[in-house]
Image (cartoon, rainbow, N blue to C red):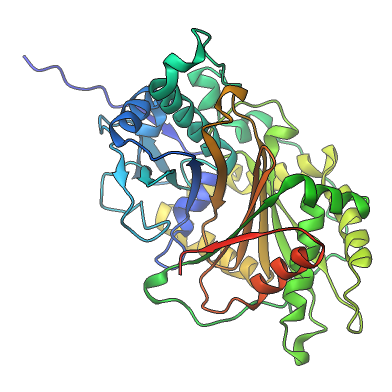
Length: 426
């Protein structure tokens, strides 16, 4: 007698519900994390590493399903297989009527990549999966070279901790004071500068990657008494302004900056657990002084990255989900409402910047790993940053043919004496 597989399901976290509702052909909600080695990737060993990794992240075997009121994740017996890279970067993963896993593992020459549908995880969560995958790959391939001492990976969370819905865990369920308009805050009805361009065919992305010394960039940031993220954000603001039409030079610019909430709330989850902040800047009469931009951004970052502000943001993110009327609203109506709200929000955004921070792998792997990189999902120009050792990789992803902003950005770094290695997919 055949024993039926037990079907288990789990609720989506707060951010996952948004991504499931708003994906489209122009915005597939897929991002990529890559690790480039100093040697060619062996697919058989990579498959063994994936088999090891999936046992530690069992919910990565989940498929996305539609309920009457919400989407949900259902466990599956689908066995993930590594693939040789052949599709466009961040090709579609989720399709409503297909029962497929929400991630893929790719290889090409010396590069290992994972591509993830954002409803499964955010960048920081997927990075933990990627680090575990690379860890097992190098252990299997080079285990005999470590003299019997097995390197340790600094991520040993339990399966339940990895799957934790930290949005729900830290939601306080209390009302905050009515939002007070802050200095430099852009209202919903303010005309914000939006980057326009010639869209690439088949909704493809133009990827331009710049690799450089992390120390050199950090030293330059310290000259302005700021952090690397603020420094790069200021350069991005200025690079966009330099390409703005004269008639729109007085429009404010708004950057969306994701916040990894694991840095502020105790959480080991590899699901979504992030918030965002909008950082705005309005240039004066042709003034592109970096000191002025950084001074304004320093103030904005300090104001937004406080315990009170983060709790307030978490409350507002969760309040709609917890609203009793929203809970009983059928899923199709929820989807329409979320998409309309998303379109309105998009009208007030110029670009995005995301910094995954410093990636720490066992020191024994230094001679095998060259760099990590991140390619964000794209519906507008976005910049993603990550660091491994002294290798800082800045990746621009854009749906447009035009590359003036990217050129301005990397030229600014070069003029500061920072050597930048540029590569592109086109």
